[in-house]
Amino acid sequence: MNDESLIESLLPAVDQQLESAQTTYVKSTFDRLVEQEQLSPDQAKELIAICLADESNRMYIDKRDFDIQRYQQLLEELPGEFTEEQEDN
Image 1: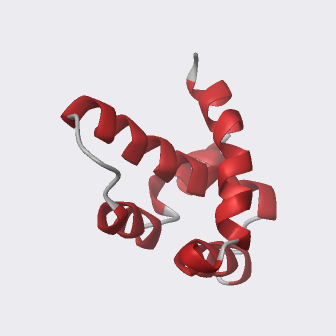
Image 2: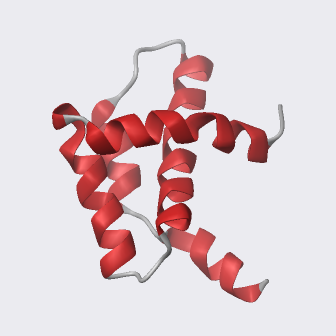
């Protein structure tokens, strides 16, 4: 599975997190990216999916449970370099 298909496969999970009362920090990140960083909703969801993929990958590599604090930290660091690379294209 390539990176693009992995991100695509995680978008439904991101949508669920945006609707869930248990993951309000994801909705806050989404709102910040769209309103303050002026990204499209699709771009914001993709960035969130990248963070989810990163934490999921780290879980697998380290053989540990999902680290919510690490995931939240990754979300707080968005938009990061990804948006700068996208602007160059």
